[in-house]
Image (cartoon, rainbow, N blue to C red; front, top):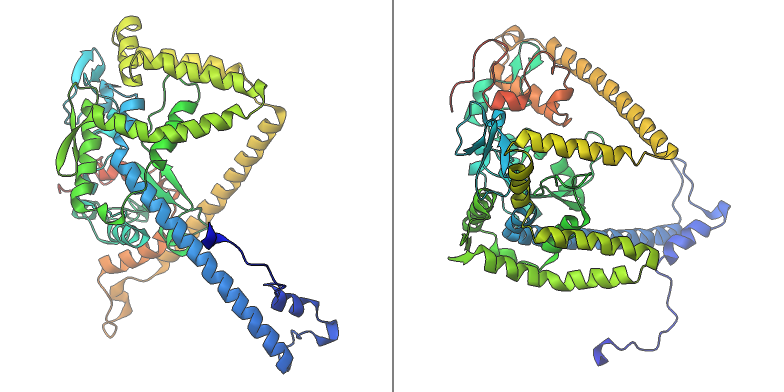
Length: 473
């Protein structure tokens, strides 16, 4: 194209020339690191150009981070719209052991003694009884960008939630929970996909995202495959990637109405995904699950073709196993999705017993994994990693005890005297807790796990150490 043609290049200065001149100046001419070194005019000019270059690089890096972050959020919005398709294609939890819902309200049906199910369910784990928190139903976190996403999480991390306030934070010197807000840490936010960033020691995930942008996304919609020894096969992994990568989404499309529709579609497919004629919410209209799903899969075809061409460029000895793995999912596809295959196997081989099916699968996977022992190098690497993790855990627990001792040493408000306007005890405890939350340590590492129930058990209404239950919401 004419507009992309390049003119004959002329010799230009290297973009790093200012820095290189500063670095290669003779020793006696270089800037001294002494506290009172005079700054020559020549040095000042070189330093000014170097700082300008550094500032330009910083601006460029910031622009790249912003562009990458916006692309990730577009990917997340698109995935949330069509993520229900993964529940249909790869959901593998249509039945549960009856002990899982003991004492809880549910709409499951009895399949056999000790086994409950829903006839057309795909993934009960992603439904009302699984990976969901009723307390978070009121959350409407927007994925239009990092600012709106961070603001939504910030509110959930800082605003008190009445039910959790009734539990309280402290039981004497032990912690019942980290805070009384709806979320104690960012990882408690239930979502099928979340933007993530590797954090530094002592850093909060939300702070890392705000400072350095999105680094990768975490997909949490996949059930463990009961027919794969490691819990996931190449086909589901590739399909989830393809679902992520289909068309970019418009920025303004993420609204409160759409967020609610995404939640309804997920719940419908989790509980009734294989129901004939099931319709889902798509904009202002209803859409057939079958028709919408086929449309999404057609959009994934170019990605699949590109992956196939890339695989064909591999050496022949590496292509044979790939073909063998591709035949496996095709054969399974003729039996229906994994949820249907699982119920068929339970009926034919295990008298509709969920426990018997899971035990048989577990023993089969154990035999398969033991038949492939780790190499000596891998075994040594895992041993070193385990020792490092154990050492870090001991250091963390020691730091926790130190912080607890410091908190206990703070005098109560009434001991400060009437001349000081001391805050109420509840606000003082909240202040101490705010400082502790900054460390982002999970509750089971606070050194109190053996004395009291976990925070999740407390928040679900478990018996408290004092013998009382949290008051109803």
